Image (cartoon, rainbow, N blue to C red; front, side, top):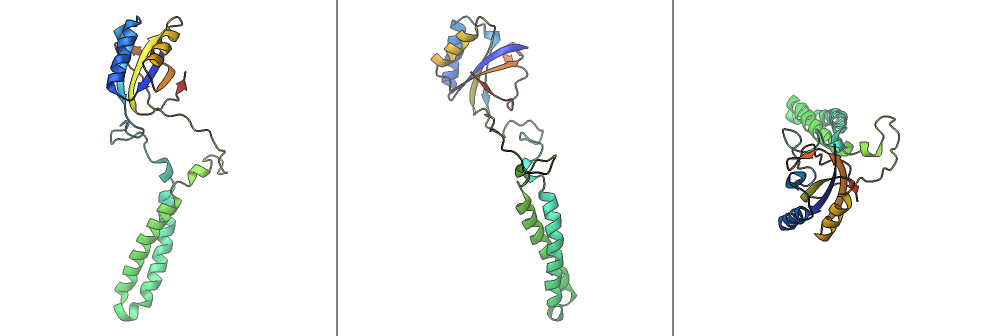
Length: 189
């Protein structure tokens, strides 16, 4: 496990200048990594894309859709029954279908994102948690450091205009941050 200092840049030219400055400061090229960090949600962690297996706000939408769909079907069937003398029994089926569809849509939408207000384990209102700083998109330049070169890396990142400077632990070798996690908690320097 290595100690890593990383800086984020908006432009590739700035990142290239930072890599050159770090090399001039004595850091070896194989101890440096530079790569583009996609915006949140676009890291393609899953084969079908995205960063999460499912949308956290949509966990309860299926239950809401089922409950409201059943209510909608009953209401729609009743409305269809009222038209039975004119349309016939087909009106009941059409009314039930339209009611079920409308009810399930309304139920799914109205129950979306409600769990963010409720603790999943206790079912009680969730305590407000502080927001964790997420990495912004841009070109991330990382350098493997030791106790003696840590401050020199930080000073170089500051001198070259890094937007954000962070401290991390990881495996940086052969010019690649092997175990980089775009969702890891950022420890700003």
